[in-house]
Figure (cartoon, rainbow, N blue to C red):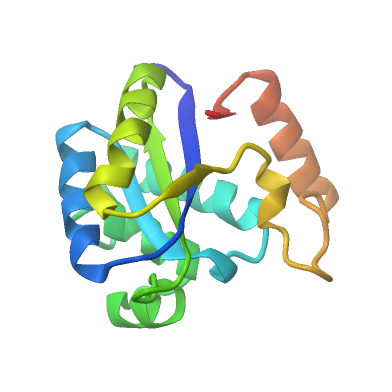
Length: 165
C-alpha cells in the first residue's frame, strides 16, 4: 500500500443533510473517506491534516472509535469520542455552506469522486485549491508549533499528503 494520501477539499454552496449519507455511501464504494462539515468549524489546516493522519493511523491499527471511516474522521476532527457531540459541533448545517473532505490513497479515485460530488449533494461546489483558505481570521498560520512545522515539512518531503486541485 502506498504511503500517499490524496485530499480534496470542496466548498458546497448549500448543504442538504439527507444527501450527506449518499455521499458517504459513495465514498465507501470508491474506497475513499468523505465527510461534510461546517466550513467554519475547522480551526486551521493543521487541525484538518492531523485529523486525517490520526484517522488513517487508527484505521491501520484497527483501533477506531466509529465503525465507519467517515464518522471516524468526524470524531478526529472534533476531538471527541461522542458522535452526537461531533455532529452537533462540527456537522454540516442544513442550507448553509459546507466543507466536503475527500481522502483517498489513489489520485484517480479522488478526481473521479470530485466530479460526482455536485450531483450527489445536489448543490454547486468549488474546489479549495489553497489549504490556507481554511484559516479563520485572527487564527495563527499552519505552523504554530516547531514540532508541527517539522512534522508537516517532513510529510511534504515524502509526499504523504497531497492536496488535489
